[in-house]
Structures are given as C-alpha cells and as structure tokens.
Length: 245
Length: 232
Image (cartoon, rainbow over the protein chains, first blue to last red):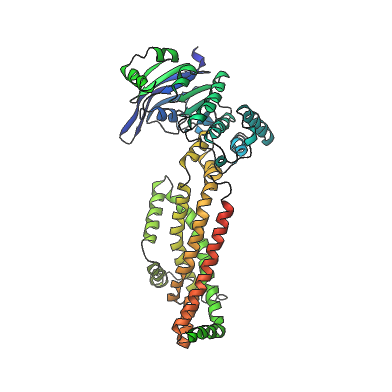
C-alpha cells in the first residue's frame, strides 16, 4: 500500500536556540489512519505536530506531503496548509467574528467559495456537531466544549486531507471532554486522517488505530494501539503508562 | 478672593480674543501633530515589528531616542538648530508665521510618532498569538491574517490609547510657546504681560486646557464603550 502513504517525515530535527527538542523523527502516515501521539510533557509531541504544518519551521529534515517536500522554501506553504487542518488546545476561534463568519471567512476569502454555498456548508456541519443554533454567537458567548467543536468545524470547512489535533481536550472542563471526543470519534469513523496529540489514553486506545510514544525527542515506540497498550516494550513507556493509566 | 473671581471675569471678557486665538492654535498644532504622528507612527510600528533587521534597528533607535529626550530639546533643535545647518522652513505668504508653525508641528509630530508607534505595537502584540497561528493554519497569508484577524482586534486596544496620546499632545503642546507660536500658553502670557494679573490669567488657561482634555477623555470613554461589543 505504498501509494496510500501521503505524509512522510524524514529525519526531522528541531532546536530552539541550544535546546534540541526533536532529535531525528522518522515516520509516515497513510490515508484514513488515526494516529495518537502520547508521551511526557516536554517530550516534543506538540513541537512535532506543529512542524507538520510548519507552524514551527524544522531545523533540518523533510516533510513530504502529497509527494512534495513542504519544508522547501519554494513551496507556497499557504496552499498546503489549506489541506492540513489544525485544532488547538486553546481553540483560537477568531474573537472578532461570530461563529458563522469564523467558519466561512477562510473558504470565501481564500478558496473563493460562493458565500451562500459556504453558509450552507457551515450550517450542515454545525448541525452535525449539534451547534446550528449558535451560528450568530460570538466566541466569548460559548463554552469551551462548544468553542472546540466549532474550531473543528472551522478546519473541516477547508476540506483538509489530514487533521492535526494539539491536545484538543486539555483546556476543557471534565464534563465537556466527552462532547469533543465524540465529534472526533465521528470524524475518525468517517475516514478522516487524523494525528492527535493527546493525554486521553482511552481515546488513544479505543479510537486510534496506531499510537506513537514520543519521549526525549525520539519516537520510542510506534505500534497498533491495542498492542502498544497491551505490551509496552520500552521501560520508559511502561513507566509512563503506569503513571497515567 | 472675590477680587480673584471678578478679575477672571474681567480678563475673560476683555481679552477673550487672545484666549480664543490661543485655543485655535493649540488645537491646530495638536491635531496636526497627532495626525502626522499617527501616519508615521504606523509606519514606525511596522518597521519595529519587521523581520528585516536594519528597518527594525532604525525604528528601535528612533523610538528609544525620541522617548528618552525632552520634547523641549527636540523643539529647540528643530527651530534653532536646523537653520544653523542650513535647513529652514519656507514662509508661506497667506499663512502668517508659517515657518514657526511648521517647526512646532514637525517637532510635535516627530515626538508623537514615537509614542504612537509604541501604542500600535503594544496593541498588536496584546492580541493573543494563537489568533495569528490559527489563521495561518487554515491558509491565510501573514498579511491576510494581520488584516482580517489580528488588526480588527488590535484596534480595540489601540484607539483608546491613541485618544490618550491626543490628550497628552494637547497639554504638551503648551511648550511651543517658547518658540513664539501664539498658542494658548503664549497668549496667556500676553495677557499677563498687559494686565499683571498673573494668577487669574493662569487660572483661565488651566480651566481651558482642562475643558479640552476632559472633552477628549469623555469622547474616548464613549467610543470605548461602543467598541466593547463583541469582546471576549
């Protein structure tokens, strides 16, 4: 299934000044795959994810997306980013726009989608996440869980080929985590390719097909989820799982 | 005491044309200073946030230097110093005292520009960095993200501070009287020279300055309330 692989990371290094956070990451992702990235704080999970759409520019290495190295300075990163959705821990809905504008501004402005079409699409997606009645609300009027579901819809509006989630439930009250995970599970079931940095071990084990343990700037272990949780090999992973499970 | 108040009444009724001319000139100077200062302040703020280091260096040095030296020195430098270097402001026949005014406005603008630049920079940087990141992550270019996401939020921080800058400039502009511009302070001194009523004259000037700045600050508070809709 070689041609199914569409995102490949080759020897990725990232340093902040003298601190080397990623020390050579090699991996690849296939279409329709749901991959969880777990690991201790400061291990480089978020940095790795943020490198995938160049929010952090790698110090060295390649990120090959749809056959092109997006680290290449000649590539128009704005075009690639339209195909790589991202959901943040802090939601980051645009505070100066209401929900509908949050969802439709980018498709209309960047992809030149007709406004009516964008609105229809937005409403359909809002319906799916159960928030159609909040289309006119401003971000400050929404709860954390609602904001995050809308942030997910905002990414979906651009019809991405892959979605990156950077600890999407870490800033949420416990009772709101479920509603966000539910939406993510639904996305996974529909075949969206997802890379999820998470502390939700249940999500990693039950929803993602593959789990990656990132610690000390390396991928320590990378296996089908049920295997990784059932038979952790490396001592660091065993220690980590003992703490969080 | 009653003498004091009757003096004020007398001075104001007899010399109101002095005060009115002073008010007019003060407002003209402050308005131009803030307008020109804002235009160049935007430019200076962009330079200061630029990734091109020579631009950034120029802006940083300019802002720090202007904010770190007295307005009085800057004004004297422009009005007395520049002509010694052979740079003079031209006279314009239909505007009396144009070269003085020009020197005053240039000095105030140069000064105001540095402060406005900092107001704008801090207003933009006060917007959460996640807003820019989120916009970039769905494909906005840096310029688009600035224009449609960051700046509309920054304006809320910037406008009130810009209003405060205008109020500061109204007060600070009294300094241009030392180079002979007939602003409110200058005309107040005239009234003192003619009448020897120092205290009442200064009291009138103080009240007029206060009325101008107070009206300004009320206006700012009003726009601030208007803009607070849709804030987080």
